[in-house]
Length: 111
Image (cartoon, rainbow, N blue to C red; front, top):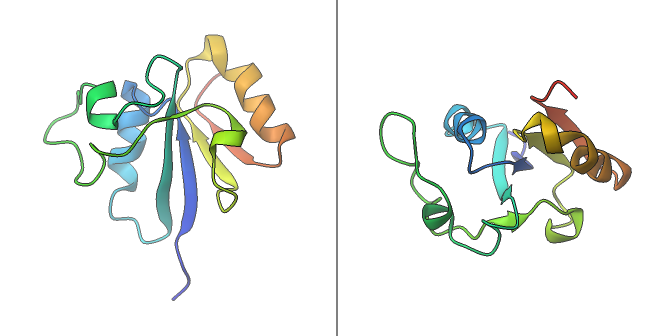
């Protein structure tokens, strides 16, 4: 069996980001390596930076994870895939920065 692919989630504190996290929990093909969000949330534990809005509890092990900024330099070198749950008003420029830095970007935004 191959190792799971390490991924980053942009916009992890919002509703779409939470839904992506919920859907990926327990998936043997992906490892959520980075939770990223706005500067307002960056540097804070995920459990403090977000209010879990989905049914049930926040998945185990995420509350203490430190939220990173939406900047490629804040991501470890083994992460090459990002899933973007960013709002359409900011998604384009941020996703372009990640693309230009060599990341594969899968987006939920219409941009």
